[in-house]
Length: 144
Image (cartoon, rainbow, N blue to C red; front, side):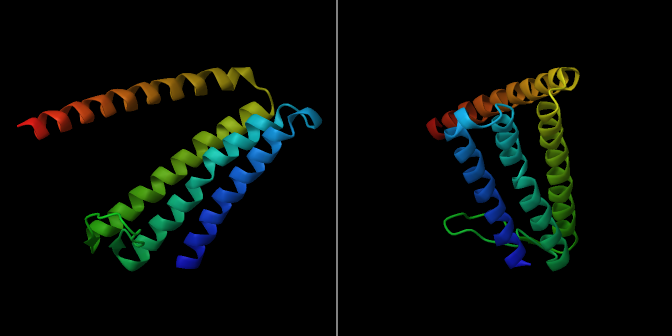
């Protein structure tokens, strides 16, 4: 399973390299391939999320891979299975979302691009607000 997890990280690196090469060679290719390549790169971590979630469910331990320098709470048993299932679900949702962007941009379907862009804008706004609240609460707790 660890080999699959590492291979999925290689897929992310390969997608980044392809997107970068296509961006550099922009004069000699179809202009739609550049955003498609970048959206494929955005969708590529979904595979890693699904594999890590499956790994956690099989091992009944979450996270199944411990990265150096990162200290996280390690959970086991039924809770780890639910965390793995949540990771798989989040990976699938992210893959479908970014895959929809790939399809919409690749086919130049403006009827699909507009709602996807609106959803992305709303999600980014929510993420920014949560980050601001988290940073503010962190500063307040440090000052107390």
